[in-house]
Image (cartoon, rainbow, N blue to C red; front, top):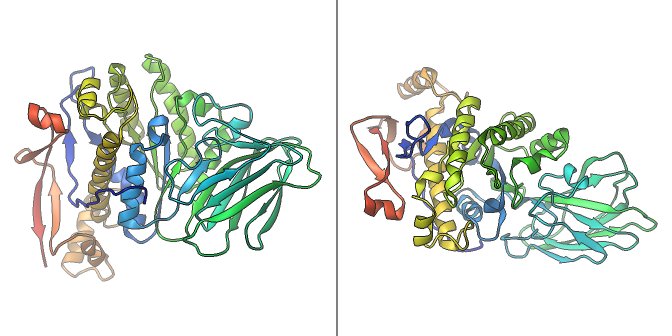
Length: 454
């Protein structure tokens, strides 16, 4: 693991409401529709499967030491390591990855940046606009990887060159990248100890005369657990992702087979909500086309700029209109001043390790609450929470429905009792940021929980 993280599980999931308001005066919630959004992911994780999450964001999701790496470690500690996921092969490839993974060398090659506008046209056929170009006649790359299952993604282009994949054993795969613009991939398995780093060599084939563009590795252990795919790009908003070929982008998202797509993109200097909302709708159309069965959660940024309240409003509108999940980090703090006072910002935008730890743990705990409760509540596994689930549960509890999965549901709860929870105006408890606990301003959740035992 990259560093020591706190790891805990909270079973009972409840609704929160925040004290900050929309244009019409109603409060922006702390989150909405998370159980339904997280149910596909948590069915995999709690059922011993593989939970794939695509992170689509800006530098707040990909920069070194940010909160997403904290989440990665916490999920790995709870459910196991299914792999290091998809990583673009530009500069910063090995950022915060498990020890042993590294870019070793690359003579006669160029690595693109992981921030700023994606280089076109090649970047339009990649997930994050990040790639490495090998030049003939002797461009070569050496990586140290943890897999052992590796998917090598590359860009097809007219006149593209041919490369050869080898390892320290007997792997030898020849791949041509010549063709109409598009994306290709080849799956390989590296020999040896699956838990030890292994070399993968990429060499220009003898006689090849065209450039070779490698766009990403997808690294999997082949074991159950959690896996994050880093599809973000620093310093850009939805406009940059819309530069990608629409069909190719949808296919690349879908090829990762995600149960959840985590979206965090802002205006990038624009303060015009209508264009931003329209462009987010276009991007969501592509994500939904590529991964129709995945949950999608729209996560606001922390309030490093006062104009981000418009992002918080726009994300809430989109989540409600399209049936997606929503998490409001903007109202978790009282603005840039509070973030600075808490020591959470290392510059005007990005998080310190302390800030990353706080947000990573906050989101992990929230997802655990909502996701684990969703799996228990969705008794008939139709991703809906309705009377059919209540009926299924009560029949199982009364012993009248052989084959019902009550025992499995009960095993997911730590303790002899199953908590049935629903909203209530009677009881409440504050869930606060550190300084809000002192100021009295808080987000609250309300519930009534009854233990039900056999």
